[in-house]
Amino acid sequence: MATSYDPDTYTKILLDESEQPTQWYNVIPDLPEPPPPPLHPGTLEPAGPEDLAPLFPMALIEQEVSTESYIDIPGGVLDVLRLWRPSPLFRARRLERLLDTPAKIFYKYEGVSPAGSHKPNTAVPQAYYNHQEGITKITTETGAGQWGSALAFATAQYGIECEVWQVGASYRQKPYRKTMMEVWGATVHSSPSDVTEFGRELLAQDPDHPGSLGIAISEAVSAAVADPTVRYALGSVLNHVLLHQTIIGEEALLQLAKVGETPDVLVGCTGGGSNFGGLSFPFLREKLAGRMNPTIRCVEPAACPTLTQGEYRYDFGDTGHMTPLLKMHTLGHSFVPEPIHAGGLRYHGMSPLVSHIREIGLVEAIALPQTECFTAALQFARAEGIVPAPEPTHAIAATIREALECKETGESKTILTALCGHGHLDLASYEEFLSGNLVDLDLDQAQITAAMETVPVIG
Ligand SMILES: *Cc1c(COP(=O)(O)O)cnc(C)c1O
Image (cartoon, rainbow, N blue to C red; front, side):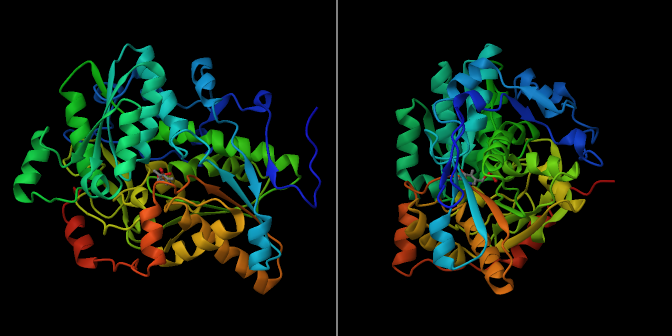
């Protein structure tokens, strides 16, 4: 028997296990034109499967370039996802009342996963496919530690070793994420580290180097290519990662249908674009098919405004020039963002797929300062109870802006957002905010200009 929802009181919309989507959705075949391919940095030819083979298992490379609209989720992946999926969709009635808005606010909550964010949605299939292909160890980078802990959890499920390079500043600021990774059996290095050549070079220049995601990626990639039995995993940016995250939007579509709603506005925070793509692509499919017409909006930090201020061009995904060239919005691969609290949004680039759909005008983008985000987070936490991770506070702040606009205009829009993680391991950020020490960090235009000069000039 399907649960029925009283329209005046429902709060949490659930799916039964039997209703869980069993396919991932690939948006590329539905786009008016496909995104430009990654290029081999030496030949500037499109990077082929053989270029990616030292890094990823073949099943993921096939998904990266797939032209199929739907890909079956293997049973061995669904078994693990069922530990927390389907995830709940909430109607934020208490926040609506607090804001006194006619808008209806819905949030899809991904903090119910073991690692506390959406990242395990892709960590699990990535670990699974590596295991299927006989790989026994995976390397990766992590910023605030969300991705590293997701992969540590996932590799533990399949008995694979996991080695993580964590951005030095976060390693020192957020010790509990490191402990979490170690609980799940991973080895964690502060990046730059003394275990790779690139890391040693950087440490020689500055022993207290704060690190960056771009540097940590270079270290994890170089460790993987040095050993043919080891592969690398990326927690965002690439097509296959966004593909795995579409389970968020597919579930949300079914959940909204249960209460007879379609969104007018969708907002998601964008670091590398994966939770945003995961939530929005199934709705973009519906929009492209003319079945609904939501405005879809990316929200990024003012201190790392990749989509709103970056240039759309080919750049490296990492600082050490180890990755293929990706066509994306970029602030320059040597750009080191200010240490804002939303560590997961401190990336110089953006998913090529999200960049592409932004470039062809299918989605919008805005940038918000972190004090507005934390102010919104307190409103949210006090009304709805959940303490959000610093990253989705950007989506919450944009949701609140939209809801307050509805109050002005009297429009009753339906707003959908992803609350992509909880902030239980980010309480130091809240402590700083509550004590008045969290400030907005100015964007250093000169640093962007300098970083853009290092971006390769192509064509
Ligand atoms: C990693 C992370 C992000 C940023 O990554 P996306 O790929 O843009 O989703 C945002 N929120 C949380 C909670 C994260 O862990």
